[in-house]
Length: 256
Length: 294
Image: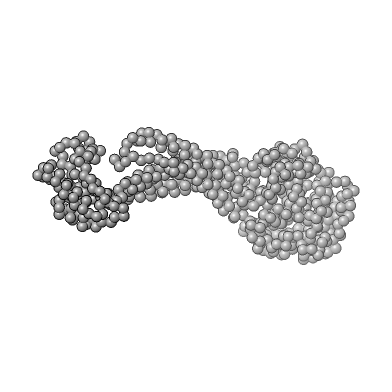
């Protein structure tokens, strides 16, 4: 994607007008449509430990793009865990794609997870599988056959700059390359919701921009995007609102 | 082109490598137990069938001599043949009676100083149900010391023994199945622990529990089948060797036992049964474990 296209993409974003102190801030895109994600007074703790998230309320409308910002230890990864259904809140209500997660039968959660693409901070690639197989897995668990998706997956890996590493195992890839495999896996299924936890932490600035352009491209096609980062330079390069997490609570901030 | 690698490298799990051996041993024991039960059931069935509708009358040797004994036998035969329920009555001569004792007494059975009762083999008409007490009483009245044996007591004890052996065989089968299933459960639990990270990744990218369980159950099925075939192979060799060793011997003097095609088929079913048990054990273990996650 060219820089011009990226700028055009960014220009499509609507400026966030709400107050940062709004108790339930709402992003601009498709506000009339049902929210993709809705948090209502959500708290979270691990076991009997202290509350990591105290009273988090926000809404991600369809086709919105947000950065999740905040200092290290603020609870960004924990909030993402709630979003990709790895954890239940200790209190409050979470709706994803209009479904109350607490009351959704466990057997229906995989179908919801398949609509969410996640770029994990620690990549979470399966060590004994090649880059190609790791990325294809996101489609295979949804019922696709490997031979049907092989070319499509290889094309995606070429696009993220891993044409030569298609058959490489994660252990032989650099951190940045592993991150790109993780990104390819997260976006290969054109998810309705893309969650990225520090997706540019192991890549140089040029690749970081390229990754964000890819996310924007997906966003233009209808994917709701939430990118957790503390890369201020990256955040300021894009005109997207910020969900800022401080001391276990969120506030919506306009683009940096 | 198919995917080159399984999502979970279960083939390389050290903890599951012993499973085929455990299953082989269990199938071997189960096959021997099942073969034993089938042999006993078959023999008992044969004996029961052979003795159905028959009676045996014992005429004790008359102290007055062989001629008097022969007369007693004739009296008993006359009485029996006059009974409307009796289809035929045939007296075994003394030599035949002594021959029946040979398996127990050896060559001594032929010694004339050993008194041997004369036997009358009685065949009843089809469906006949004579009053055995009245018949026995009239026999004793005609020939003092004559005894009527309807084989029920002997058959009852035999059936009791056969029933006990079959129960023991069933218990051995259940124990073998439980032990094999437990081995698979432990291997599956170890596999879940070893591959916890990969399973977590599969889970988070939207894999259903059954998608993960299928990989374990497929592995367990193959291990069960392999162990089953090995155990069955050893059991068949053992049974053939036993058949070779004891094939010419009448079991307890009660007739030869034979292994038919149905018996072999029942034994052969143990291998796929072991595979199915292993598969079910792995599936249930994995599904139960994954159900504890969100």
